[in-house]
Length: 278
Image (cartoon, one colour):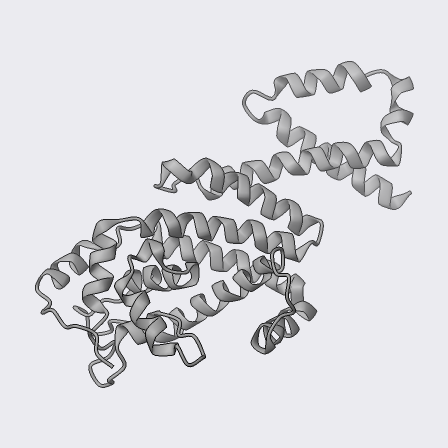
């Protein structure tokens, strides 16, 4: 009975919060009509009914959280679908379905990436940078750094094909890596690139993507995919919140400021052409 009382107290708190929100007066009125008389109380106190109303209140809170999460998001064209996917993401997190959670989270990253990658200035910026080194003291080229190489005999051909492609036509992981690089790379500053932060974000985005692929994969995972699952599966409760943090950081980095930035545009305009060579 103590557990039931806690549920009831939590439920009353949710109902009070909902009743104070603009436009929800009807909800309180309906509850009063339906459950205002004493004989009705035993019905609402039954387990299934409590759970049903409790879940309804939770879903209302999640919807409000999703609206607030994307409140200042500048890409209005995709904002509604992102909010819907955020609600799905939280829905599956509450039901401890990690695979579906990652799917809904990934759909947000993918929608933002595809929208931003379909931009002429962004495409021109990354192509002009491909042949230049990431660091002045190292020979590694930007193309080698941001584009994923296939580990087979067609490695070099595959990379050259990617370099010749528009960003929007690249594999999705390459697109996210290019956008993140453009948002972080600041060669006009003394501390111009945080390599550790870039690696942290891109590796976690890739992990989310691998869980998303479990919804579509027909063949067994390869060795490195298996390593990802073996690392994350025992600590899913931790990764629910870690991955939400990765989503928030990704949005903050690529969607709250222009890519390329005004400073980056000026830098690229004065940058000498340098064709990628092996």
